[in-house]
Image (cartoon, rainbow over all chains, first blue to last red; front, side, top):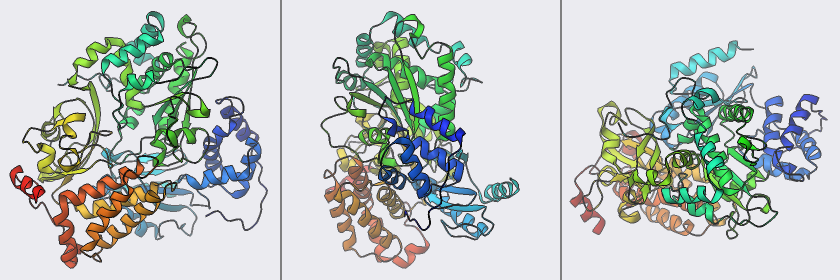
Length: 171
Length: 455
């Protein structure tokens, strides 16, 4: 859900703006709105989520109505509309992955991190959620971690433990 | 070993780079098309090949191309559909990861054939690593003069861009993809007008799957006639099959269309049989949307003929005893899998992915998920089974796009073929929470099943 509790001005960096500008050139003149999905991904990579203020800024940059950004950001499931853990473990929960143990992996992650789906660990490092098919069914079970969407395949409880340990030590 | 024309060089070290790809005959199709052919002769060659859309619908590609409107002074676009999201399908990810230049080369030749000066590859957002790979490949191709202005001195200009999606299955539907490419929600459009007349930014547009575009490369290199000799009947050429589930060797395989299903599952060249020495219970042969078939019906048609991996053979028997080749997402279920649980899982998927535009799909998928969830968790009633069939029938054919059908078919087919398992779940709800129904008679010889269907 999109909710505005307090308004905090944000400023996109010059580097980010120049990336936006390059993306706009990929589309015909006047069709700059097409850059919206790419821009939302860049903003999420920078801030970890997409705040209403960020959406307003994007709308201003693209010279479109704010609602045109809201409706897109809320439609696509990859965009986080509230802050997340530093690492978001997204585990595929669809049929083929479940045939080879994805549900067990999700239970294991829940127990290991000690938080329910969608919640953030106390240290702010982790959150997790089940997502729909990631098109990697031959390497199932799988999970991904943004913003680069690195893939971890053929998961076992042991490999998940190791992954979480490695991420804890990563700064 | 069967002949491979897409994945022939997939194991060559460094094939993802321009130089190695080029050394192995890469970009010959671009040279041939731009230097010795006209756009129309490229389209003719693709028509001759009999190539059919590899994304799921199986529509003849050459015919789709010939529908493209070509009004003077209006841009035309080619958009590659790399929004691979159909559960069970992961061939496009494989192709883009390991041999990205095959897709780039196919995009150049196809764009030339259609007269597109700017083309886009719409990749699902979760495939960020593949987006980086494609962007690097595009930069390499541009550096070598295969993209940009006046390609190979032919006077033909082409720019190629990659756009990420945002995690929405529906954007694999071509008009939803076009909406998304325009920076909007992925709500499918009402057809007509078809994209060939009015697509992206209301310009004539062709949308093709990754594998379809890649197949244009061998078609131009060897000729449409040669390509059409591969395969069987109207299923020409080769197909990438994504094999998953309880198989010894899941993965992506390039098969010549017409390969017996039994050989695909059990031979060492392909999947190597069912994992852990178990028996096969059921198969979803073309991605989660197509009807699930019990083992006996996937191995043989109702007439006792061996079932083949082809558009025609997999759909033999219609939806009563057949299925579809679809996207080639081949999901195998062993004897210990629960059909009810899997059907609930797929129903949840379609409910989650419905764009919400059409009431039958938005509401119907939700009800199917809820009823199946009750059933799976021991709160079902026998009348729920007919209720599910009823809801699925009210979705099917009553929506703007095929997602409604795709949501209805898995539920309807699971009940059609595994009704006894659904009933057992309800009448033995306590036991069903602890153990599965098992293999039952799904692997038995056909006459018994024929009888069952007649009853």
